[in-house]
Image (cartoon, rainbow, N blue to C red; front, side):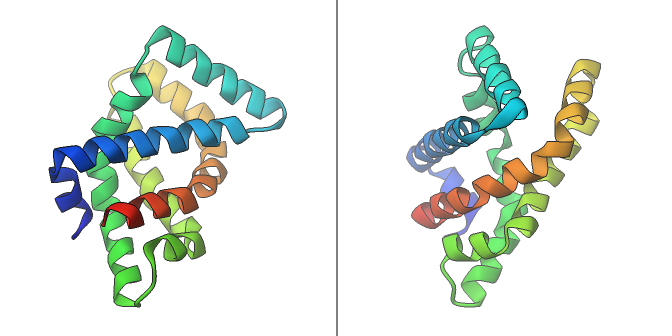
Length: 144
């Protein structure tokens, strides 16, 4: 079953959304240092000002993320590997696929404030996304 098929199942899509939101929460919680304090503060602010914002973003991006990750998942399957293990071994490739989606979204945004905020965060995004890739691989493995 490919990622798009999984997302077409409403119950699985809802469960995936919950798992990904939990992964995001966990990754934000792991942040350390001055930049970690800033990330945690910004995350808390967004959650306070716009409850459900993260969930809505995850729901909106899931189809694009699935399309970007499906070829990588297929490589894992073709090589007879578990998706979670494969993703863990290919964190840079997976992170680039995810960031290509968010880069495209940011670029096409009509909101200058969104573009500006994304540009400021993009430099550190790669390491944060790479940190989340093993957990994401486990989520994908769970549902496919």
